[in-house]
Image (cartoon, rainbow, N blue to C red):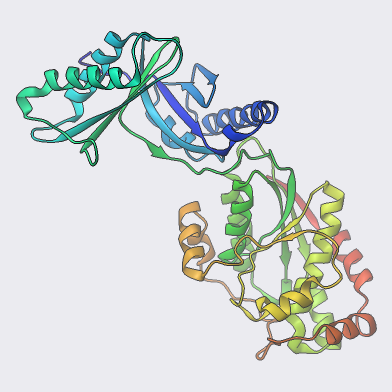
Amino acid sequence: MEDLKYDTVMVRYGELAIKSEQVRNKYEKILIKNIEAMLDLHKIEYQEIVRERGRIYVISEDKRAPAVISNVFGVVSTSPVITTGPTLEESCKVAAAIGKEVIKDGESFAINARRAGAHDFTSQDAGRKCGDAVWEAIKDRHPRVDLKNPDHEIFVEIREERSYIFTGVIRGTGGMPLGSQGKMVALVSGGIDSPVAAWMMMRRGCEIIPVYFNNEQYVDEAYTQKAIDTIRKLKEWSPGHDFKVYEVPHGECLRTFRERGNIRYTCVFCKRMMYKVAIEIAKKEGAHGIITGSSLGQVASQTSENLLIEHHGIDFPIYHPLIGLDKNEIVDMAQRIGTLDISVRPAMGCQAVPKHPAIHGRIEEIMKMESEQVDFDKMIGDALSRARITIM
């Protein structure tokens, strides 16, 4: 046992475990399919993926596998493990070898043991026996046993057919398996917020249909490229699931409204137009809702009054996963998911934003402008007919 061989990745999931047998079985199969796609994306070899109740095991000796699998939506944590037979003696032998490898002079350790199935010993027995074996293997290093805050914790899981021994736990992304909750249209811009919002709903199991509204003459090419690149970054989180990306021309709509409407309502009108176009795309694609990056009070169009106007008369689910987060929290998430560096690249912001936008808008005003000064249906039809579709 001098050369320890971690031959398996233990994959843990969370809320899937509390689902009914039928639903859990369905979601586990989706999760395994997503794990396979993530491993294939990173060219990680594996021999097999095995399901046991409450656990998934990926048979692979690739040291990258635990970290890569931890990025699959639905995975709570992973551990590289050494497998051995289901006897207490075999488990003790491996635990002692791990202790000898990782525990240094004067350091403390603890054994976290559990067993499942029919055995002639308890979990407490397994913990004591393995602890004794580790102590005996390293007693010349003067180790200490600390059950509350050890320097090293060795985990022993003994099941019916084999035992799993490990010491490291890698925190996973959590959430629900991607593809378990249907599809939604995600409004994605080149900013920080919208890709984070899309990612959060992906984490809850939604496949997304990214839609970018290109404000054309009011932004530069660098801003458009940021939007496309953030979508590509989101795609890295969803191997095995194609993105059908819509790029919708939007500059002409803004120009028309700025010429005919109250310019202070430009941002509110812009968002309403986005919603109406996105709803038509959602109906076409069989999606169940619209995702936005709105955070309450962050910009003029996201005050509570203006959010009310933007949603007025719209009979379709609109989700704002960031609504209660502050900017620092959103930035931290963007950093974690890999979109922040893209979103903060230099680019010209939208020049259609008025110098003094309406903050406390009135529904009556925007309804009057829409009915008397702009032809909403025509603009929606024109935008959809000119939309460019790309498969990623």
